[in-house]
Amino acid sequence: MAKKSTTEKALVGIIMGSASDAETMNPAREMLTEFNVRCEFLVLSAHRTPDETLAYAAAAAGNGIEVIIAAAGGAAHLAGVIAAKTNLPVIGVPIKSKSLQGLDSLLSMVQMPKGVPVATVAIDGAANAALLALRILALKYPRIAEHYEHFRKEQHDAVLKAKV
Image (tube, rainbow, N blue to C red; front, side):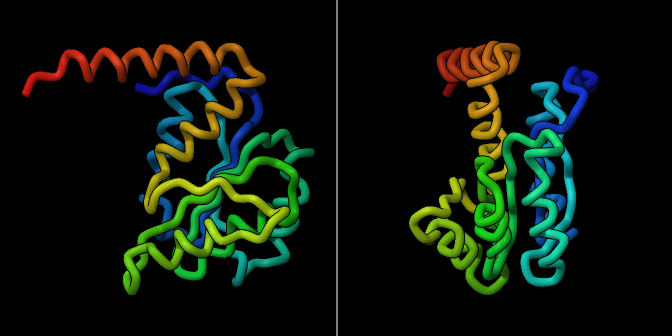
C-alpha cells in the first residue's frame, strides 16, 4: 500500500501525448508515489492541443512543478515543445510505436537543437524517468535524497544476495 504523500503540491508533471500512453507511464507515477512525491498525470498533445500544451509549460513553474516528464510516440514532439516553453528540467520518455518500435520517438527526443535540451531515457523507460526526476529533486529536498540513498542500497544488496 502506498504511503500518503507528504508533499502538498505536485512537484513533477507527467505529461503524455495520448491516453493510450497511461499504461506505459504508470511506473513513473508509482515510483514517485513510493518516494512520497506528488505528481500531476495528464494528457496533452503537441499536435492536437498545442495551445493548452504551451500554456501548461509556461505556467508549470509558477504552479510548483519542478520537473516535467513528457512521453510521446511517433513524431514525439511533446518533450521538445514543453522544453521550448519552460526553463524546468524536461525528461523525455519515447513511447514504443507500431511502425518503428519507438526508434522514431527516441530519435525525435534526442535530436533537440542546441539551447533546448531534453534529457531522454530508454524507450518505454517511465520508471527511469521518475528516478531521474527524483535525483534532480534530491538536490533540493533532503528527505528525497535520503530515500534515494536507501533505494540505491536496497538495489545494491539485492544484487549481492542474488542466487544463480
